[in-house]
Image (cartoon, rainbow, N blue to C red; front, side, top):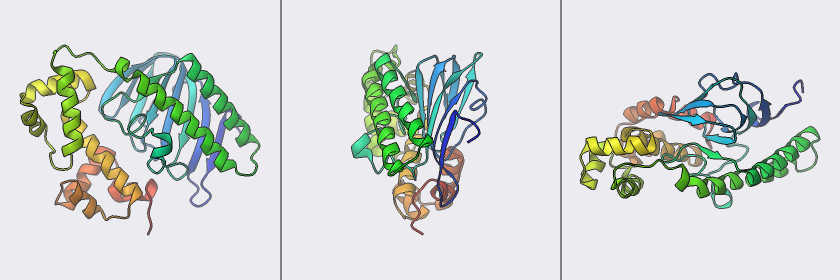
Length: 291
């Protein structure tokens, strides 16, 4: 191992990244567009700037932990030096969907279209993270019996700690909305998207249900979620499509139909536009392929 600050496990079956932990002392790792086929947890220890993720842009400062899903686009723009720690793992190493009942980070840290993809790390959580990461480094430097099980245990505790932290902080990180009706409308909007994203795909559909003009709903949505309603609907559909591609052996045509698309080709183009990869390639590089 040439760099003592980099610890990597490779999947012996295909040679791809399984699990990786490394420190960084500048922004060069993430100053270009990232679309990785694995999960990334990026803890900013020092430095500040902004990050573009999906369709939104956010400011960051020291003590920020970012979480990105496979093929979620992101890029950091640091104002000067940036130091931190990155923890990355492929779904083959640990699948958050299959272990949702144990970890409950899906929809909180990952695959969450309603909240920013980061959490503020307090002192207590920082101590827990540092302890876990030290143990990961020790285990990867001196591998022994049941290494995989031990690393997964450390990863689970890390994810649970971060998920709890974000759940506690969600009221604090939510943006204020000037419209007094905003919070009520936005909660109803979230409920309606979760109920109808498989059948209703346009912002006008949701504006009608909320008895608000599309323009007014667009303004509130952009102010609170920092993204358009069109993008939110698309993201929710893509999250479900990815879950189906990962966990099942349904055909792309079957998945498209379940999500309200009668034309498989149109759905495939829609998926590639939003995920930057075709449904089949996503399944082959991230998903569970029984074939």
